[in-house]
Amino acid sequence: MKNIESFPEDFTKNAYKKIGKNVAKIRKAKGISQLKLALSIGHSSVSIISCAEICHNNAHFNIEHLIKIAYVLEVDIAEFFQGV
Image 1 (spheres, one colour):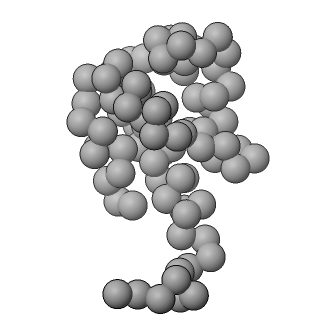
Image 2: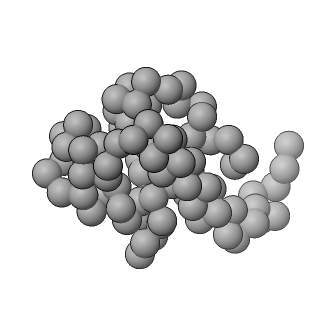
């Protein structure tokens, strides 16, 4: 078991960035706009998607967002974690 003191300082932020990039890649491959995705998961603004995809101001997707996005895009949620 690893000691938490050795946990890399930027590991979590890098994981959020990679997840955001994966969401963007899959969304674009399916031809879905950020606005359409935002609306389909119950948000009235594109900002949640646009900011989380690039981790702007430390914005990131939470597990509920990822579950809904996976459902809407018809992908396994694990695809968002590729390379993390």
